[in-house]
Image 1 (cartoon, rainbow, N blue to C red):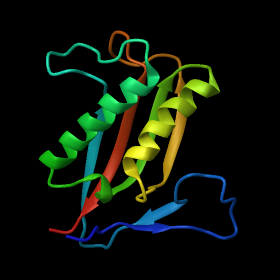
Image 2 (cartoon, rainbow, N blue to C red; image 1 turned 135 degrees about the vertical axis):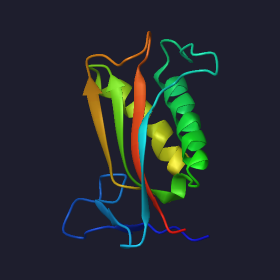
Image 3 (tube, one colour; image 1 turned 120 degrees about the horizontal axis):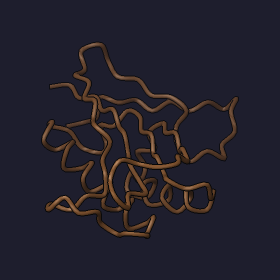
Length: 135
C-alpha cells in the first residue's frame, strides 16, 4: 500500500539537510503518535551500552516493531525527533547516520537534539516519531 505521507522539499532552503523540510498527510489519514523508541532489549536491559550506533540501531528496530503493531512502517513516518545524550556533535552524527540510513529514501522531516540524560540506565539514544496511514 502506498504511503499517505508526502515529503516536501524547498529549493529556497539549503540542500545540506539530509531530510525533507516538511511533510503532509491527507485529512482522512490516521495519525500514529509513538512513544520514544529506546534501545531496550526484550528483557528490559539497555542494548549497546556505550555505543551510539548500536543504540541507534536498537532504537530503530524497536520503532519498527511499534509501527508494525499500529499497522504502519518506516515509510509511513511523517516526522522524527532523535535525542542523543551527548554534548559531542560527533556522537549526534553517529546516531543520526544510523537513523538516516534506516529510513533510506523516505527522508522524513527530523530534528536531531543533544540532551543531558535519557530515561533508562546507560541510554544514549531515543527516537520519537509520528506516522500517518490511510486505512
